[in-house]
Structure formats: structure tokens, C-alpha cells
Amino acid sequence: MSVRELARVYGVHRRTVRAALADSTPPMRRVPVRTAPAMDPWLGIIRAWLTADLAAPRNELLR
Image (cartoon, rainbow, N blue to C red; front, side, top):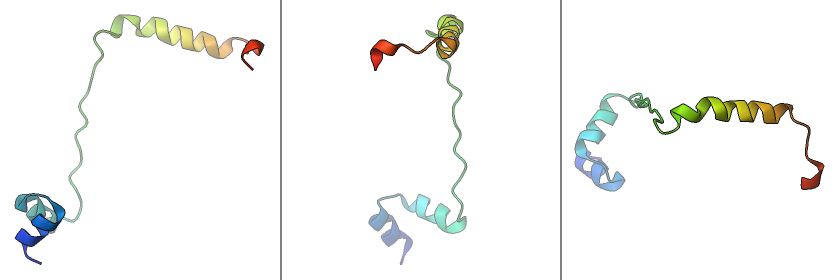
């Protein structure tokens, strides 16, 4: 198949087809480092609650 036909069949740009033909492994994805500025002041408190919940006795009323 031609590059143009492959691009049409798979719905990608011809440049993408050429890159795929040149290297069989896809490029590594860059995962952005994200922060939660609204949650930052509360993370310590929330983690403490969750840790305390692990040690708390199970509530029998929820069965």
C-alpha cells in the first residue's frame, strides 16, 4: 500500500504513517507532572483520616 492509502485507511496523517514505517516502536509518552494546588493544604489531613480509618473497627451497622 502507498503511504497516502495507509493514511486514508487508518485516518492518520501521512507524516504519522512515515514515522511508523521508519520505527516500529511507538515513541515514549511524556506524562506531565500535575499538582493539585487547591488540595495541597489538605493532603496531610486527608491522609491522616484514611490511615485512621484503616485502624478503626469495622462498623457492623453497614452490613
